[in-house]
Length: 594
Image: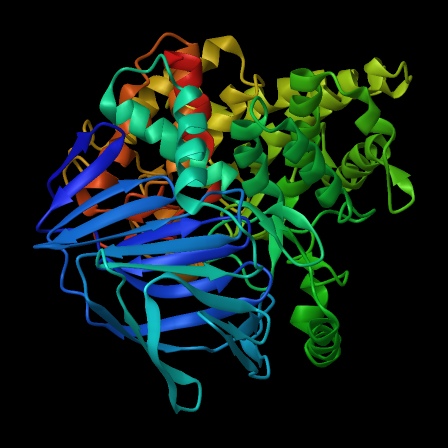
């Protein structure tokens, strides 16, 4: 798919991206082929489904963060918002009348791991006043230019709306969850100037576009989730409203120097689900109706009960969650010097006490000084059963011990020396047991069997400085030869980015879901956030980071995925758009080019 750069815009002609996402403090608008497709609220669920309009197929399109423009012959239309507001503007020019058919589901989805999907629909109430139509005080459609010529219900929750243009052939429509007097065009301009200013020294169009879209992805992930404000993981990870430990770790790194206030708040939100017996994958924010349903599901189903130990847990006891919580706390303190957060009380315990709680719980998994994972799928590779000494989990635990030592030293607590001793032992064991000298890299895990393929998630051993220096460069060079598809000619799909593993997992019995297939999900897809972590490590040790940082972005733009994507592979397509942790690219660009 051909694209080019016009000023700060990514431009396409004739063959255009089929999907684009705009996202602000509460609303997410999905566009399909230049037309509005779905409108979602981070706290209220599915608001509007757009069935059809009389707009033509677009021939050209420009995209920039939280804005886009489409043209076809004499008609031009654009959508504009900003990460900081709650409304979206749709501005059309050159059209005499808009005819729009749409549905108003006002429906919130609910599920927990190992259960089905349940839908809660809000009662429908319609209020019309002058040029504004309000649906149950959840979403309003306001005509700012032009006038409503006809509005009628066709059946059930399906509607038709006809809007006539003004004298200049303009139609402007605002979608809003709260009535607020904002100028969306001005807000979008100011917001984009802020994003561009963060990368003012970056001259290359491709790199600058990646940096700006990545930072926007992090900024627009900050959501009103109903009961709390927190970071959402992505479009496909929003209902029930929840915030993830690991996703928010990588996302927060992009926000530390631009919005440290949000990082502090995110740490406090995560602290609510740091339990004596582990941290979940994510923290849920449920209303009363959802809480009642969850209690019923827990009573009826043992598997749900085992994996939802606490009412706000989304998939309890994930091994990497707590370690990333400790690492995020340390990163925040290094960046801000805000020691006050350590004594902040959350559910009767201080944040520093929560960090200690993470490592006390981890003690029961430590064997001979090294973290040993049970046979389960409870870390980022949640479609793979890994067990025993897993490099990814053991490296995060080792790094968390070191950072905990630093945190306790800041407040002159004697536990600091104990954590330091355990860190040194864990680092020694990690490098002795999990680095394969013959292969020249860290193996995936040593458990029921030895999975000695190369897994990109072992990059955390290097990124968090727990790999011995003598083991670093050979690991990175093996990743370059085996995981970078430009160099690996044994995989059949050409040059398409950095694979997560090579070769694929040996044991079919350790795989399920999407990862059961080679090149899919955790079994060989390209994951941009891990590609960026690998790029940072290459740069730190004097190797060229360009390929892992830019190859996935170049591939995405060629496919028309302008919003940073969750994962992809040639035979299986992509994951979610506007994925929060893919914003980590902004950090790496700043380190190298800014």
